[in-house]
Image (cartoon, rainbow, N blue to C red; front, side, top):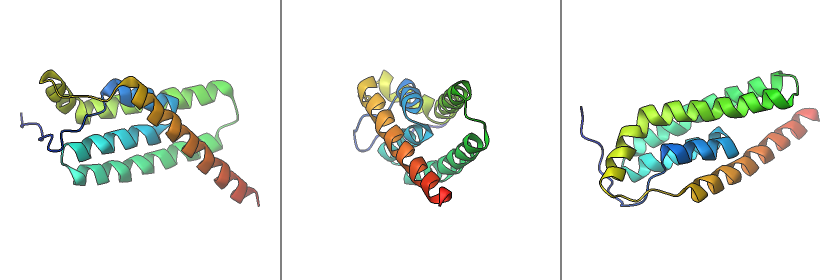
Length: 139
């Protein structure tokens, strides 16, 4: 097993639970941002860039699928829960060991309130972008 990356900056990390809560309240954009922030804090800018690239491609597919689906509350709930589950699985697999390593050694982690706030702000941004795209496509 390799040694976890060094937390060079000393900034807090987002927890897996925080990433899931933020994704559930906002969208996959919140999870992407929090994972990217964790990678930057851990000194891995390359992985942060890869997270943005792959994450936004997946988010674009989610948006296309949601536009193609019929409007339904239950389907919207499935999309939200699906994004949260994806964030849980990916963040746990890619960052879970590093987050646990630092948390067990007394490093600070961001609280749930901050993760929820990131989620709500990401949700507002996501909704605005979707609304603008919808308006442009309707022209």
